[in-house]
Length: 308
Image (cartoon, rainbow, N blue to C red; front, side, top):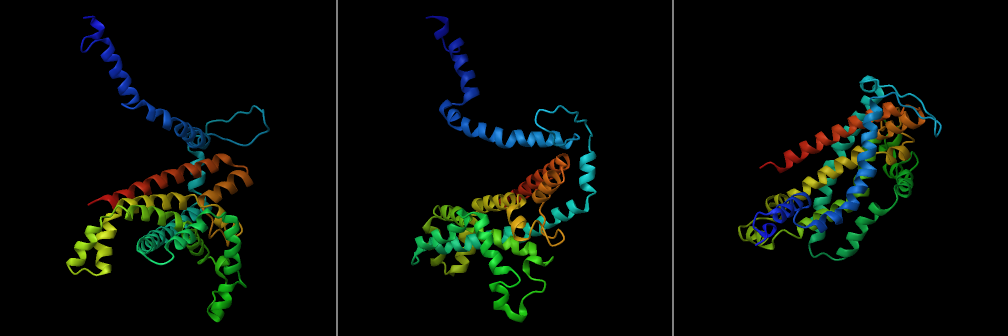
């Protein structure tokens, strides 16, 4: 028998190396390659460039111009950390997340549980909750401006109970209103995630709970909530990432982060510092700090939600 056909021969060794490199099903690697290239070009490369910019004196120039971009070490980070506007923006996003994420989780889970039951017009309600998510923010913002402006329907309905200053020009209410708006707009997407998770909860668990005398609330608390914990982890992480990238809503609802920066988000501040004020290196440093913060918060959320 030729040596190349013997067990453990060169052919077997080559096949083992190929399997170790490509896996048992190389076609899977071919299928994910386009998306991996998309991630590398759209996310990995810009983030790597942002990290490089944050350690250099970087500024916009005319196309084709050759200029020096000296290494400045941590100077941009020092400028960012000593900037009161940056600290205010990160504080604003913390307030936003503390309101938006719990509100999103609670409403999405409750509504998904209700829609998972045999209720009338269930399909219509599912579509109705999803429509705001696929509607452009610019269009929906116009409706909320009509509702929450100084002379809007909400203030007219509240009468003397309406806040003064009004919702979107009030330093204490602007960010909470934006948090509620984002929760409402994205609710349909998270409802779908919970609905998918609820489809995998065995009916026998609810039947066993009912036989033990559990009420609907007891079944929800003891069966539904633990069963959809992986979905809850995903919802919390996605809501955190989405909230940390807040830009369109404060830019349109409060005229660019007003009043007095009370609704400025870190991403909006990056736009102001980098594009409007011409300091992309400082904006890049803000972005790097934001990414680090989001990663740490997401890992903490995952640990808290998935621990036994």
